[in-house]
Image (tube, rainbow, N blue to C red):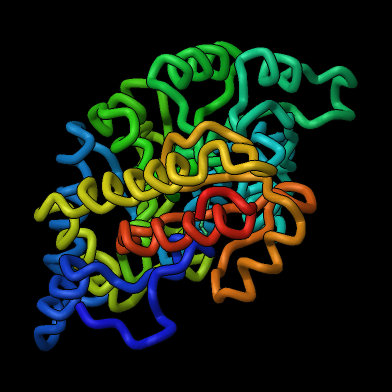
Length: 351
Ligand SMILES: *Cc1c(COP(=O)(O)O)cnc(C)c1O
């Protein structure tokens, strides 16, 4: 595919990418005259069935436009307005959603721990799960994990299962923010169910946008009792798409073709290639293990400006000198290698 100059894949975010061909074709095919609105169409029914098949179980699936809506409406369904939601300090629900979980739940607050590499631990959850001041403190009603995490790491099925045990024993539900769920599946080489309901997950925000869809995420209820009346909450939240088929059809495109996992596998491989190519460059240091499609690396401050001057786009993320390099489904080895060569040259290493 020919790209106009200046629009090559960048490392800023995987949602800077365009739409993958499999989703694009499916979207175009769904543009076939009139079809029932509000999800009464064949594409929506088939896409929900395809997600059940992906997870090898009967679950309730709701399509929404954004990941923020998936997280906050899903969580609102799982907790009381007087509850707390336990999450990692870097969690999207804590720092990137303008308080949407609080707003949509009618008051539930997010409480956090800043454990290493973006991953909550059983110990941290247990410490947060106490309500030391009886009615004065919020009762934890849910744990929310991000899989893959905001620092490019993943939870193993066992880690998730252990967290689920602790959560359930204390009367909490387990939510997963899976904006990059496909990257976690690809990284772990497991069945999607192994890091979902088989690991004790009650509700999953299943990401599509960052993995090549034009828009749209799915809220997947494995605990189907929690889905009761959710259709109305989605409506109230302004997320019931009237032309739902356009949210649903791209899912069919990536699930039926296997592109869902293929693109995530490729994105992960590009991050691995990038990490290997800059390993050991003087003045740089990896900030977290590279387990999904992001590389988090500390670099000398002048290098940030110099890389930007050469046209590279990325987010400054952790402290003053930590940068985040995300690889999207359409990242290429050539671009990774060019970026790594620039890093080595700027560090005065063997360019
Ligand atoms: C991108 C992202 C989301 C979804 O963000 P929206 O912009 O609302 O679609 C949710 N969680 C994580 C961890 C993300 O990276």
